[in-house]
Image (cartoon, rainbow, N blue to C red; front, side, top):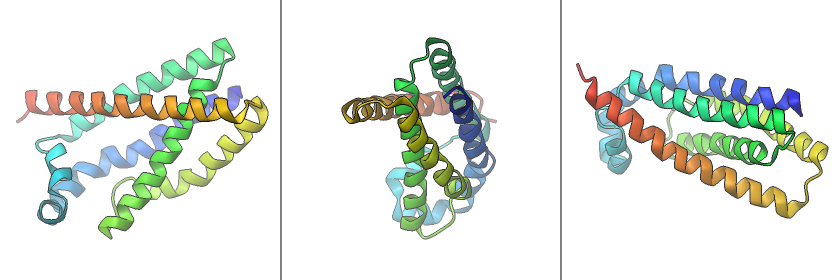
Length: 167
């Protein structure tokens, strides 16, 4: 399990690098299309800078590393497993987003590449840990909630930083 614990931040940063590098330029390039079809979405990213986006990813990485370190030293992997399941579900969301908008979105390529690896890690982790199904479901729900709450916090940081450092 200790090997898998450290694959989580590697997979996370591999995926998020595509988003950091490509999201804001993609957003600017597709602004009129997104305003027409997905105005609610575009409002969430109004005025966001690449630096603000990168700061939000950095905050997420810090939380992820805390979870990994705690799992590694405590030999308890429930929250780690829930977070990793949430991350892999996040890959599905990006693939569905791309299908819905019928365009490449920054996050699609790494989501497609990381998805089978992530599914295998989940499968093998569940086999290794032999947690009962109810615990896996509980950890998955907790992981998804943790990710959901933290994404909102990361978006808040991203917006605040972007607005405070607007050039």
